[in-house]
Image 1 (cartoon, rainbow, N blue to C red):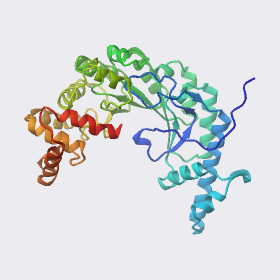
Image 2: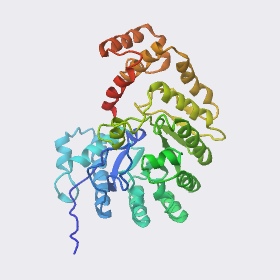
Image 3: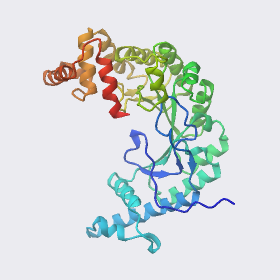
Image 4: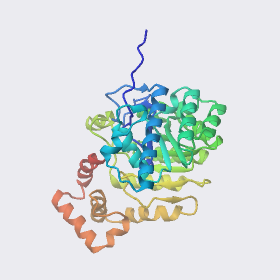
Length: 384
């Protein structure tokens, strides 16, 4: 007989999209149900678990309790300390410091959004996620956005009826890690889905009236599959027309299997210039859609790749085109400047102060036009 897992208090997982930094994080599952992608090291040493639904509901109730306590203190002008708030607790039980911290963050950021964790929470039974979503809606009726990660393989297995019920229960944005639209690349990195599945899943989400964020990864195919990665990914997105396309340039953590393949010479990782060429080709191939492209991650070299298609397409392409026209010395200065936060945008290359800072970093790192990509790989480890 299986022993029921005891409730151990409010939980939050390790990740969420940058766009959900102000959200209340509600953990429905632990870790990732697939956990085989070779470019990812996040969950490699832990197993996937579904949390009992009643535990998730207790988390929601605890967050609501502390939100109410914080708002009541603010309204009355009674500035309760954290310890005083912690001493308050639902049902006379011991206070939950994690729930209190989550409530503080939620209140301070306007209580506009909730993110359902971890990596693929929609894998649970539809009636269970719908129950959780309805409880969230009852607890926080004024929240504007409830979002979740999901795998394409999971989405295509959910019936249209259940996906519509999830939307009606309050789920109004899904984040999918497409990474690539190339079957060769998807197979190489053991993504567990193919191009057809990615397209079908994206179209199902849109059909249900749920906002869709698709994440793509320039550089994931390496030099050998760079052109295919760009063209096939753009083609998949053209068939989906997601609300958001979010750029996540390949970054290689020490523990990722793909990094070991690179060390052993089995993966031909590209440097900044070749990855920029792939990114430009990708943007050129996006046609017939009105998606908003977001470069909302530190791994991306060009923060200017941020706008809505089709109107902003040329403006997003311009800094990449200009960068590719530079001589190698200037490409090195911008790349090092950007990666060491001495520069934020391509136009900073013309700012004398920021340029001097970047040149100083080039000198301190001892880089040359032949070696700066190696230095950048080391720098980027801090951001993965």
